Image 1 (cartoon, rainbow, N blue to C red):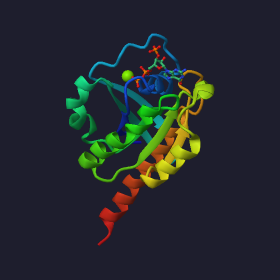
Image 2 (cartoon, rainbow, N blue to C red):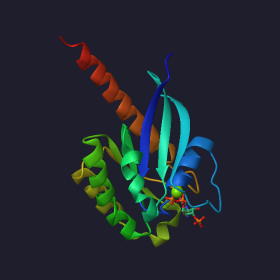
Image 3 (spheres, rainbow, N blue to C red):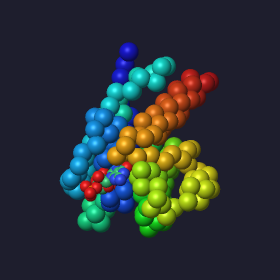
Image 4 (cartoon, rainbow, N blue to C red):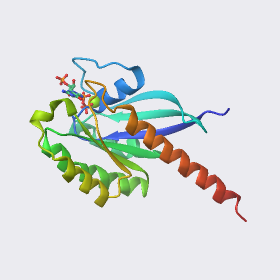
Amino acid sequence: MKLTNIKITLCGEGGVGKTSLATMFTEGIFKRDMKLTVGIQHFTKVIDLGNAKVNLVIWDLGGEHRFRFLAPLFLRGAKGAIFVFDITRDETFAKIDEWLDISRKILGNFPAILVGNKLDLEEFRLVPKDIAINYAKRRGFIAYYETSAKLNINVHAPFIHLARAIVGDIYAQDIKDFLP
Ligand code: G3D
Ligand code: MG
């Protein structure tokens, strides 16, 4: 069976747990003393969706502002994106809008998933779940998940959900291409 490469991006402020989520999803480990992501980093994982097997190529951008100039290169060619904030830092939630606007400008319409990470720090939560859900609905996200990269809670779900949405879209596109 042909293995299709699918590029997705992880968007969001520095320190929200993007690299930790990608590392847990692809390698099954939570690394302490995670080094700050410098520039762009890639993770890959082959996933079996039943009707299709795809190679998910996850692009991860360093959160520091000095890497923002890489954003267009980072986003180009992506078939979908996961937007991550930290449920204990509301400024990271507020910044999602900026990431979404930049992404839509470059990619147009694409499947996007919103993730509130650090669920293990529930006692320090500053972003209420219902606020995040309403925001996700209003801004056209296809789903909202709360995760903990640290405790490996719900980490796979957003990646699989996004891959399914993308593959579904690709199939729909194929079918359209065959219409007279
Ligand atoms: P980023 O790639 O979005 O910049 P990182 O974020 O993955 O580098 O994570 C930033 C910090 O948050 C790291 O801590 C990491 O261990 C921590 N972190 C990531 N995910 C979780 C989580 O689900 N729960 C908790 N409690 N912490 C998490 P350090 O101390 O290394 O800066
Ligand atoms: Mg990082």
